[in-house]
Length: 236
Ligand SMILES: Nc1nc2c(ncn2[C@@H]2O[C@H](COP(=O)(O)OP(=O)(O)OP(=O)(O)O)[C@@H](O)[C@H]2O)c(=O)[nH]1
Ligand SMILES: [Mg+2]
View 1 (cartoon, rainbow, N blue to C red):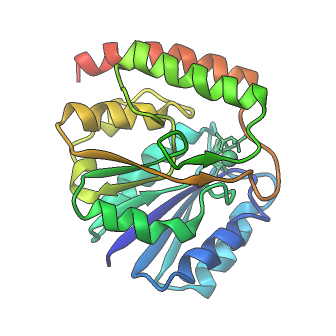
View 2 (tube, protein in one colour):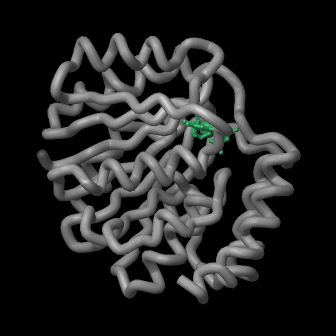
């Protein structure tokens, strides 16, 4: 198939069916891989039902043990890149990333190894980003440049199209991000490997239903991890 779309989920029971149906509605040759961290709200069971309905075109992995966007991301990208496809897509399952933008991202991916959907490149937007979220996002970007030298307009964006081959050499067993810094960690290695990386504008919407998984604890751990990525990578 052409694409494997990886969706990380934690408590997205109302959003997952919407995103899955919108993705299948695009009429692309795609497979959906969901990695759920045993969500207490029953997202896993809803995912099972969707996978039954879309047999052969969708699979859900149920992770046990400690949860984390990064832990799920490592499993998801690794599994997806082991499948027979040309591109691996990563996007949030809360409808913040519009599946409708995927065909355009894919077109750009024809001449790139990684396409990043950016909220901050000319033409990109972020709905409902109040002072706190804007500040959070700006600080995240600043620290990413400071610690990792990743000078992109939106290095923390989780809407991406990867050419499958660029994921294969990544040192998944030695990656250190349990949480959201996984997006910076993968970007760091991919850039180091000399990939062609392109940013393109996206319209980031507020999550459809439910609440953000980002807590103060996750932010603090995120900063600590970010500081260690370059150091760890030097030995990888
Ligand atoms: N499997 C798994 N997925 C997660 C975990 N934490 C977050 N996610 C998923 O990762 C995606 C992004 O998480 P969000 O909580 O929306 O974080 P965000 O988009 O940075 O923050 P908001 O803008 O506030 O929504 C969503 O699809 C979440 O369900 C986790 O611990 N495990
Ligand atoms: Mg979100």
